[in-house]
Image (spheres, helix red, strand yellow):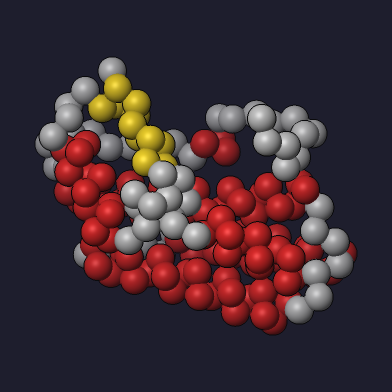
Length: 156
């Protein structure tokens, strides 16, 4: 069994996701795939979090742009998914909490960061489901199986 991990530059757009899917399609031993957020999404989420402490409407504009970027990727891949709305609603809820408290805590930032990986993974999953008709493709949200501790924003 092979675990494949694709970084943000690899999944930055539809062409990148297509290349990654080709690797998976041509490598039957790949059983687990892990994705980073699409290129620059982590930086965009960080900026949203910082801006939300003082300018909620600007933070929402940044979120809207990020959503649009991912919608374009999905359009280019020929997929649609309304459930992505749930992840963006979750991000908006986090930004609201940051704005209400006027404080970007490490815990809230980590929660916001997770949206990036969860969005890219959902988009890629939907594309693999469509493309790899001869293989079972399932999605496991890492937030459902990974336990964290109180060391928020800690980089090992």
